Image (tube, rainbow over all chains, first blue to last red; front, side, top):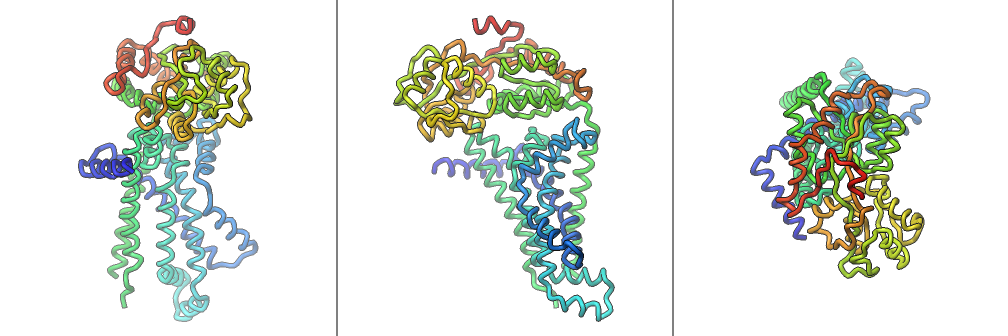
Length: 232
Length: 285
């Protein structure tokens, strides 16, 4: 029990003294996971919406693939991204293994199916008649999609939160493709793993608390947007 | 309308972070050295201390990938690392014989210890020979926790089992964690049982473990670290100049002096002993 109290105290000290290393790691974690989430919103929401609103042969198969993708294990993504990015691998010419770019790539691959799957479900649960109604009122197809997105914004923001939560908390892919390099690719989760193996349990707990705090703050912002009353 | 404005701001902020991240990643990076090493050099804090000095001196940027020695050498053999700092002599010799390395230079050593619970149910405390100790552990069927991850420590453990003439794999009393040294020590502590550890990691974790050093000092227990540059003739993409600079740095007098005193303030004794220029055979005697 003492060790947890130590950890909480340590977290408090690290935060109020603006420990430069911890601040750097925290800011970097937010940057990497935020960018990856943003990319996944772009790809996941647009493709999810397309699949939700269209009919095509093999659609059920595609949907089942997307839903399976939501369970992609980060370590497996990390392994494949590493193999592709190796110097002598198929994408080696990019020279981005052990860089922040590689971490963003891996995290985007993890988050995209999550965002896509939830977007798909949330667009599909809108009443079918709504579409006809909107079109009947003379809206263009694009206008219709925008209105539908607005109607589905509650679950869509949940998709964003799930995607972000998935990548800010994952460690397997980040440590593999980033390498946990000090001051360069070290994020809160990989730093926690390292401090644990160094036996610095108090610092590890402190980092965990900071990670949780920031995840909470970001979700608070998103939740505020999500739960806001609709203007009349 | 107000909401739209807010969302727009959010998107803008996100777009800005994207562009920032992408410009950071687009910079050319010829000065990078990928060093594959074992977890013990990182977990002991030695690299955190040495690397900034090296980087400041030479302008290189070292990307430390801390994995087990086995994996580090596998990376080197694929040309995915430029320089190795490893402690698995038998595997290193094979690595050199296969033409994967340019030069293999002795950097430092510390030693392995056999640790266990203070009440020592297998009565191994004070034994002089590691192989005899392992025989004793097997004879009493005492639970032994192994790294089981092809790390340098794991390789040493297998060497000792071989010297004892015992194959522990598959035995009920033999458990492989597949984890790093710190975590494996944690497992041994929870189960109040025996394991082989490097002294540096043990000293760093000692306060939380409740495990004692029971056997130490046998010649076979030496833990020797070498630096190896990966062969650029085999892998043209390897940064050989950087690797060489790092190897030279590790055996330079200044660095060796730092190694000699590193950890004394925190643990009361050094974690590593500098050995540059010595012969491996002289260490084991």
